[in-house]
Length: 421
Image (cartoon, rainbow, N blue to C red):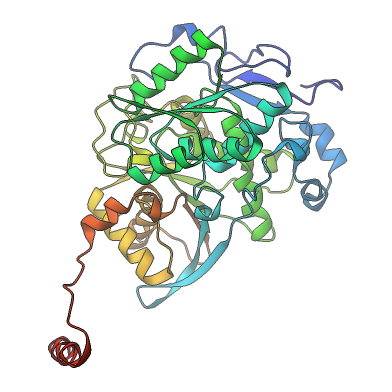
């Protein structure tokens, strides 16, 4: 484990070896990553580990760790290195009714659309930005379907860093607009997310840019794990039974798992929540491969662009966590996502992008199947705002025709209201 001079170490999830000291940039394990094959998830994902025994003695109570902003469990030297935006600390909203009926369980909506660039990805981008700031690394580059790109662009703008963003040319216009407004260098790529990802790796190797790519950079897990700390704090230590996670690459899932695993190691909780990986049946490359001997990919066609992934980069870590802690996977249809987004907005006032709505649709499926236990606490991660993808909403909504103003309009309203009753 880390010595007194090391706050943390990197450890490969496959071979268990550490690639070196904390002041160096590390992406994948140098021993295992050469075994990776094109079109398959990368080998040699790295995990960041801390001196948990020492921290357990230093922070016997969660309040002590919280009072220091969780700095002892973050791979940076100072909280002041983080971009000066309020990242994390997002609302948790409790519900005990569904479709007009009282529930025998409680579900909570964790609204991460209230992060600075309106998505969960800000947690990872803020931490990667802070590490890069402390290490003097520029520019930062990321491949993204949109949210990670706009997130990194926003965080770098706040921190005064240069950012390079690569997105599929089909990325939603709202997300592309964010990237450009934040002043980042944008490179749309002819192809899908996976092709943008590979090009960003080539640029990293050729130009020496610091890469924020999800899973490839182990600090992305560290940023995303902070949501687990917040959930524990917001529920005042109550048992969390299940967490519904919209899943593409598997990095949000792995990050949340790692956060709860650390709470377990520090003695703050005595059981892991059941993680439920929710994927569209039209992009199920993580869930479908959980119990297969050999990974097999198929093209993703889901409307939920944020979880549309052919090759889930965090697959091996996500699979390890799900198997070790008896997590679950579920696929839903794109129609489920559309209906879930509409129901969520109408009944809770929260307008979620398709990927976030997938997690809520997963909760609805579990409810319909009678799989939510009496007295249980169930979390739904809402990972992005519906304003990120207005084209999606536009396809599901009908705008009524305009009516005349004045007395003619009043007559039209009377007729319309009469027909509706």
